[in-house]
Length: 434
Ligand SMILES: [Zn+2]
Image (spheres, rainbow, N blue to C red):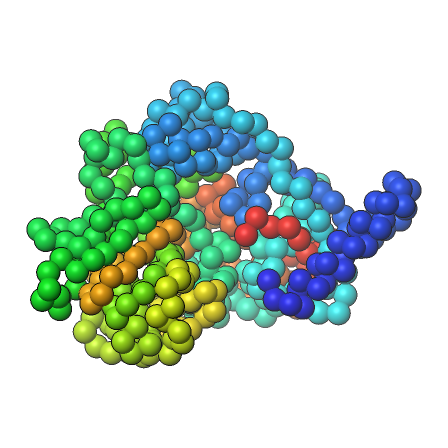
């Protein structure tokens, strides 16, 4: 949240607090500014949750939420983090929908922007209040294909912060399955002689031999983390399954837009290389204390470099490396460092079950708090991967709105006229989960 937004939020919350202190009558008078509402459906999960249950996985301890929009088959919930499929959903804690505030003045002096989450009177549902994200602007022609949004025929490329707002957590290494002794490790080395060793919360690396010039790789293996007749440890490419829609039977799609998030500690002269595979080729981001920089490569080919100051300080730096919307994105300590668009190779997509790696070379180093995320995968109106598009450009003062939870959301994709006139907006939604 930038400073301006934070100040505005503090100002609005101050008004709400004052209004609350003055009593209920006054609050009613101030509803013109901030309107508190409770989210009623899961169409914006995981940004906003409707009535839902939360449950801690019996195997890995990961806490996941699933909506009441759908029944859980046989009362058994599958953990999205480890794939354990025998979590008793009747033990889950029941929650009401998220409480949010609607800022009714948000668009008094500025136009709605793509990515804003807005509340509106749903023209297709008796003007009930609904909440969705703006993804199409006036005069644009919007198309959904291969899980992506195209505006006027051009792929919409999100910034890293936007991508993280709609990303789904695929694997959090803080929650390793307890049965991992019987199963293959999710992060592991294939080398006979490796310097990687698992710690609580991450992996430390020490040079395995004095002659240490090769990259020593730790590789992520993806398992099937959804209900399936095959064993969960069977390796498979990452798909667009999600925990929130437990019980929804639908076609899944392989996702190659991924973000690796971790903390990197490089106390001595060392290099840590992060690798992502886009289903056609691999890209690397090398963080080097020797050159004090992060260097981006496509295969062996150098692409670009960004300086990183004080890299030898012995502290953990949060680092994100993503391939999202045909661009390479790197941020360190929350600061965007590299955004590099590219054209994918002209060959068939072949997603791998091992699309992410971390390699070390040089002196001791460590990588902790490792999380893997996948990009949002938009579906057409009928849930499949085929193309959806609005038949004409969006009229003036009108916006296309989509739910983040594409498999169950009822939104612009389903309306005869997909645009939503600005007059139907109630305001901008504050208090999202991320
Ligand atoms: Zn689990």
